[in-house]
Image (tube, rainbow, N blue to C red; front, side, top):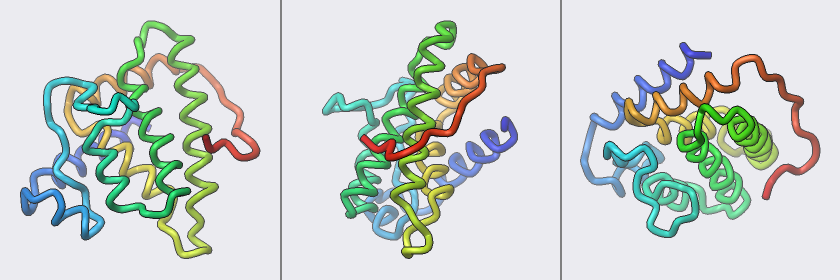
Amino acid sequence: MFKKIFATAIVVFLLTGCGSDNASDKTSKGELPKLDRSSDIAGPDENQNGIRDDIEAYIVENYPDEKHKKALFQYAKVKQASLLVDAADRLAAKKIGTQNSRALHCIFLRFDTKKGTENPDIVSDKIFSMTTNTKARLKAYLAYNKALDGTAWTLPEGDTCE
C-alpha cells in the first residue's frame, strides 16, 4: 500500500513540474492542471465546499457529465477530509474511511468502461494524486492511513452516491 502511495506521489511531483504553466492548456488535454503547492495542507477553498479549488476546477473542466462530476466531488471531498482529520482521533479517521469506501464505490458505479467511460481506478488515482501533491499533504495522508492500521471494512452495497 505504501509503495503505491509513494509511487503515485512521485508521478504527481514529476507531472506538476513538466510542460506549460498554463493550467487551461493542460486540463483541455485531460492532463493534470497546475496544482496548488502552498505549505497549507488544506489549500485554497474559496467556496468552503471541502474541495480544494484547483481540484474542483479540474473536475469541472474535464468531466462535463453531471453524474461523473458529483461522484468525483464526493471522492475529492473525502480525500481532502482525510488530510485534515486528527490522526489521533481513531473514530474520526474510521468515519472518513467509511466515507472513502462509499465515495470510491460511487466512482465505480458511475464510471463504467463497458460504456466507454474512463477507468474508475485511473480516475480515482488522479484525484488522490492531486490531493496529496506536496510532502506535507502526503505526510498528513500517511498519518491518517496509519490511524486506520488494524481496522477492517465491508464493501458498501447499493447506490452510495450522494
